[in-house]
Length: 118
Image 1 (tube, rainbow, N blue to C red):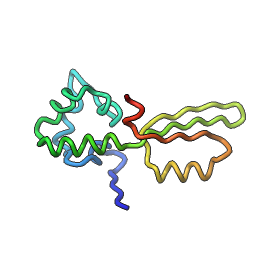
Image 2: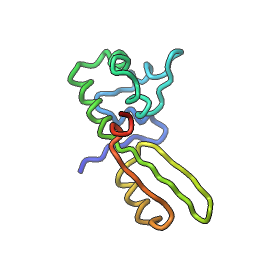
Image 3: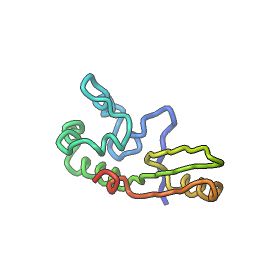
């Protein structure tokens, strides 16, 4: 298994193939403020392509394929009447570790991000 990560202080977009620090300056402008991969995936295809216009079509497709396969994690926790809901793209390994330690306290659903945006 191959695992890729970035420092917590860096953008998660840097985990995507072909994305560099230089590309990131286009993600936050006066007209747009894209902070998450979910926001990026939720954009119109034309807008996403324009955002990454410096990349080849093949590189752009690599990014889209990775984004579509990102997991969408939904966790509902209700210990003793306290309810908390977390929805975000998440790492499968972390989700499984979380599931094994809190099995009686929450419901876990993991789907590809694509299925949650269609």
